[in-house]
Length: 403
Image 1: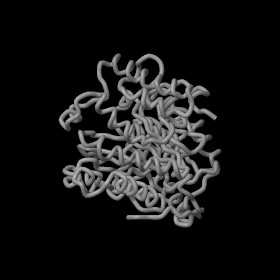
Image 2 (image 1 turned 90 degrees about the vertical axis):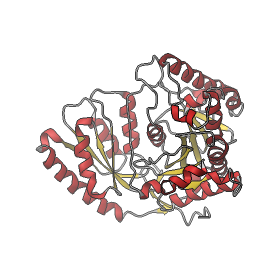
Image 3 (image 1 turned 45 degrees about the horizontal axis):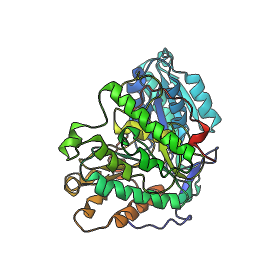
Image 4 (image 1 turned 30 degrees about the vertical axis):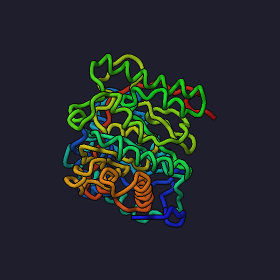
């Protein structure tokens, strides 16, 4: 699947803020769990073009509000339907205002006012059907690799993850950064033990301090919970400690200079490599920082990620709403069992049939092909997982984004 990254090949949908999307979907967003079923039924008619996202909580949360505003104005989103029960505390008026100001069509359906389940579904389907038809005719413009924002996560890790899939993803990240793209890695709870080697890559001494502090915060958070980011499946797969798991997770960041530290919903100001701090600030209030890999994908999407590289050793079948996922198999035996769900077989490195550099180039080519319209495996299978829960963050300081 070798592709060049010729600007003429890659085209995107330009948004009012100048960003370009590699997809052009309708987001159907529920604003409380009570509206989830109705939103899902509205999108059911054309799930390839209408994606369901939402916030399940009834009570307001500044993090959730910011996340929903960022996601509903994601560059891959062309129109937004908000689905409200009517009595939840989520500020639907503010969200609709932000979407409208972004230049996207937006409509709000309130179930309590629209006649209930069937009536709201019928109205929502009519609106979504019309928007899909309009978006199908929307023009595209040239797009370059330097305009891409790419995230990376690893999940279902085993002993192969840190020696095949993650290092190969890191090589792809280095190539993307060299081409001017923006790359985001996270999982600060899975970087414990890597503070010093990561800080040595910081672009300034002040940023190095912030990077160390983010890992220390994660360690304190998990110590308070009495549970770290290390699952039984990791141990079954041959990993023995959080430090060992961290070293493997760290490898997917590559070797580029770290340009800054961001939190969910912050936009990196320019191309480069960024660490995302996903562990809430303040006292432990909300339980585990990321209850699934999809929560991490959502947070990177909120910071503009067009797509995500997902490295797995034991296997994972999830994808994502709004932004495609490229699944990288670290374990060759798992790849053979779950090949339909995988995009890249990095396990070939372990079998001696490919080098890390070759797999890294293959991942880079997949990113470009994805941006040119080719579907990922999870997209083809219809995966659109999404999860958003309560968190709380303080704004980043100036040291986090050096000039």
